[in-house]
Amino acid sequence: HLLGVFRAKYPVFFDAAPDGFAFLDSIDRTIHVEVRKLYPDAELPRFDCSRLGDAGMRLEYSSGRPFAHLAHGLIEATMEHYGHAVDITREDLAPGDGTRARFLIRPRAG
Image (tube, rainbow, N blue to C red; front, top):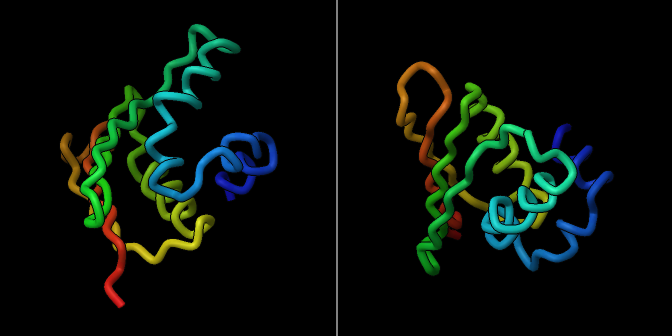
């Protein structure tokens, strides 16, 4: 649901990305830059992305808020929006509190 709200309110960010991996990679470098212009005091999560070539992407989420589950859902919805069939694995880096997690996003074989 939340990704649908973001798509409806800010389609320019989705239109600018050719695929889901590029969109995820643009969150900190582009989207959060624009958010900070409007809300300089916003406490935004970090999305540190590393492309793994054809093997997918590693994304590390960190936040002062325990929303790693929400980030997981947004990653899934993003990849679905762009038509990617992927497998996502999650490793909690701060076990039990949801403030830090590493996601491996890999294209599904087939």
